[in-house]
Image 1 (tube, one colour):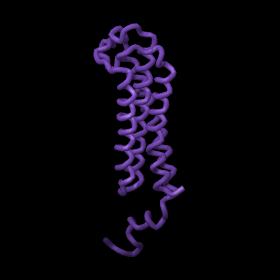
Image 2 (tube, helix red, strand yellow):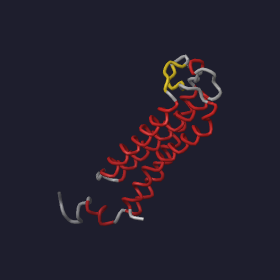
Image 3 (cartoon, one colour):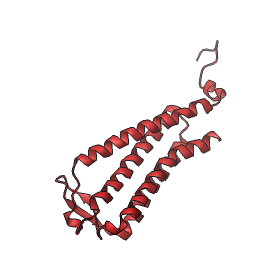
Image 4 (cartoon, one colour):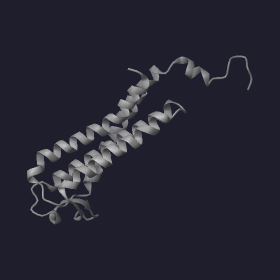
Length: 167
């Protein structure tokens, strides 16, 4: 696989997978979800924002796939070196993990609620989402480093000063 295609796959894959997990979770819980869904919670964990179940998947799709696209384009255009690309990939993986977990946890919090206003989401869920983001970011960093072997030596040598020349 060509390096650019591989890089595009590596960058886009976590966003597509996170979207698929949220859609599958939604489909599995659909009959147990209130309409509207509690989608925003205050510091006390109580619901203070709501979204209709019909609009929820549109929002998830726009946020996850849109974030993936907004991560993909600049990452593929980075030419300053592998380190900048690795950081961008790791950041994208972390973001997809954070958003994917947050959306799925939101659906589980709403499951079996008679009214969305009674749904609560404890603040420790944010800690779990951040932990998922850290693990996913590390995975992205590791996966992005595999491209180092695919960079031709001529490109890496281009940036080095030639032996015997003074700059």
